[in-house]
Structure formats: structure tokens, C-alpha cells
View 1 (tube, rainbow, N blue to C red):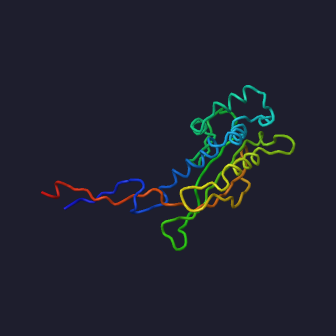
View 2 (cartoon, helix red, strand yellow; view 1 turned 180 degrees about the horizontal axis):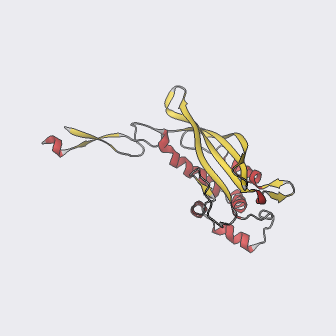
View 3 (cartoon, helix red, strand yellow; view 1 turned 90 degrees about the horizontal axis):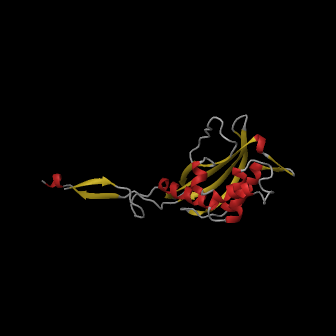
Length: 206
């Protein structure tokens, strides 16, 4: 007699669950924001990393240019500019930053198809209130939201359809930070599976 054992193996046809697609979707979203489009990604990096009002306008500042060029997706995650854990914990005396927090919410099964899940991807944009005003009636959270929307709109994930912006709301985190919450609707797929694998057990045979 054989012994039944669960193994996580990708791209099989057994036991689908859209929860295993989360890691792929997060990687796709982060790559779209930071890696795949040099022009808009550079503007987004400037808004996140350079808190001065001239972060977009001053294109001759060597310090700004060097800061943006050195920034990678890995470094932005490590330094906390982009977060996939829904927590804003700041170190004492940490320099002023702006943040993007990416989370999932309000998931439910799709009608007539148990293999897919409808859900929402929430992107919180948080900026220190002292860094909101960029001059000329421009507000940092809305500029960040604009570039995120350009980069993510109609992005295909691992499920059905593409990312579509559904709503946005003002977000106040505390007396120092506030911004916007962007809500994107998506249908998560079943790109990852956890198949039921039968393995022989020599002890059972004897």
C-alpha cells in the first residue's frame, strides 16, 4: 500500500487554489511599477525617494539623478518604499519617505467557476504631509497615483482579465502621514497548484 502525501508542485492539474497566485501577482505588479518602464518608473522613484518639492522639476541635480539610478526593486523593498506587508512601522529618526503598500482584500469565489476568485488589490500611497505640496497645485500622493495608474492599467495578472482601477479614497494614517488608497479589481487564477501525490512507503509494504 502506498502513503498519501501533499507536495507543492507548480503547473499541475490537481487541487487548484488562487491563493498560490498571490506571489506571482505581487511580483508582476512590482516589476511593472519599477522595472519595466524606465520613463514613468523614474518619475515614481523620484516621488518616493526625494521629498523636496522640486523632485520632478530639477532634472540637473546630480544627487537626485544618482539616487534614482541606484534604486532597484530589491533596494526599494529593503528600504521600505514599497511594502507588501500591510504595516507602516517607522524607525526612530528615520528620514522622511513616501510609501506604497500593496495588499489583497475582499476576495470571493466567482459565479459558476470555483477555480477562480474575484478580489481587489489595494495600493495605499502614504506621504508625510510636509511633503505633499509640490507647487503649482500639484500634490505628491496624486502624482504618485497618476504614475501607478499609467503603469498598472490593463496589466494582465495570473488570472482572468486585466487590472482595472475601480475606486480611490483619501487615506489618513496618522497625524504625520496620509494619501490615497487605490482599489483595483482582479480575478485571480490558478497558475499554482498543490497536487495530491501518491508516494510509496516501504514500511507500509512490509
